[in-house]
Length: 248
Image (tube, rainbow, N blue to C red; front, side, top):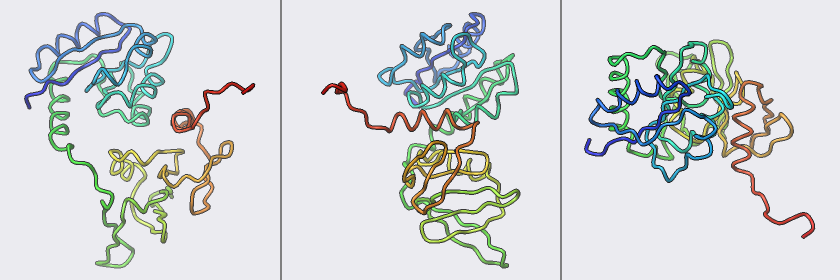
């Protein structure tokens, strides 16, 4: 790959910034665009015009946490890499659509292997997922498979070791986990986790009433506490607002 990937480091510890900067300099396909030791400064200054490919994000920072900052800037970078000294953030990292999770102390070999995985993803993810993309699920009958068109999925409901896939025509039960389906759909921007037991397709959301999401098939999904902040930020981004004053 000829084009170098632009990298941004956000970490309040200067020695951690210097270490990652040295690693980036050692990899031919990477270049350091800028770094921040103040997360609030990063929030204010990072923009889509920066053409950022990779953000290396620390979690424990003053002023604003790496988790909240990740939610705010996720759309402004192609890849998000969580760098932290605490394994407890692994679940939250998945919630903010992090591509990788590096546990400190970060060795050069660990860093290089992670970049190699990203390079592979970079080379294979340049095609847009077609609207009629699909997958098959096994049914409870031997040698019988059912085709699921991704564009038809309204919501996915977790039921212990099974899931219900609600589409705009019918409901299917599959011996799959929520995590397996979330991984399958993670590259498709149309899907968002709204609670532990539900993933919804945003284009099928009809309205939101308080903490209840109403879908086009009339299902009402309660918004989970863990996913509330992320969903409300998405809702705020998609809400039309008037620039007129009330007096007008």
